[in-house]
Length: 257
Image (tube, rainbow, N blue to C red):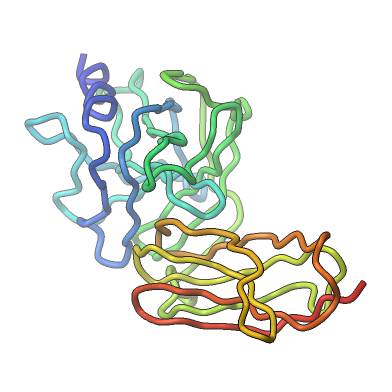
C-alpha cells in the first residue's frame, strides 16, 4: 500500500528539512526526527468543506503541482513539528489523510520538539484565503508516542488563528513582551524570530554581569515564549538579552520582592 511506503519515507529520512515550498504565501518547515508519530483522519474539513488535496508524485512524496493545496500542520509551543499536503491514501472514500508528528530528539534541531505523552496542536491552512485555523477532532486527539499511528474519524477547522490581515511570521527579531513587569519571582518573556537561527536568551544585571542563560539553541521562525524563574535572585533591575548572528536586543525588567 502507498500509505505504508509513505510512512516509511518519514521514518527513514532523518534530519532532513521539509518545507512548504509549493505554496506562495506559506513558509513552514520541520526537521525529520528519529522518533515520530502519526494521526490519520478519514475526513478533514475547513468551514464544512472538504480540504483541497494535494497528490503523490511517482516517488510517493506528497506534492502540490497546482500550488493551491491546503495544509494540515502540527505545532508544539508554536514550533512546527510536522505538516502535509492532504491527500487520501488510497484516494477513495476509505482512504485517510495522514499527518506526521516529529518528536523530541537529542540533536539541536529537534531538542525542542514535542516529547512523548503530550498532544500536539493541529492547525489547518486555507490557501484560498491565506488563513490558519485551530482545529477540533472526532474523537479527541490522544497523546503521541514513538511509532504510534492513531486512526481518527474527522478533523474540523475551528477559530481563525492567523489570516491575510496578519503576518504569518515576524519580520524582525524582537522582545515583544515581558509580562508581568515589574514582577515577583517569575515572568514570561515573549520574542519573535523571522528566520531559522541559533539564538541565546540571557539575563544580565546592571553591571553587565551575566546572571543566567535561559535558552541557547536553534530556533524555528515564529513567536516564542520562555519563563524566567528568578526565585533565588535579589530585587533590582535586570536586562533580558537576545543574541544571534544578526545582533543583540535587550529589554529592562524590574524584579520586586
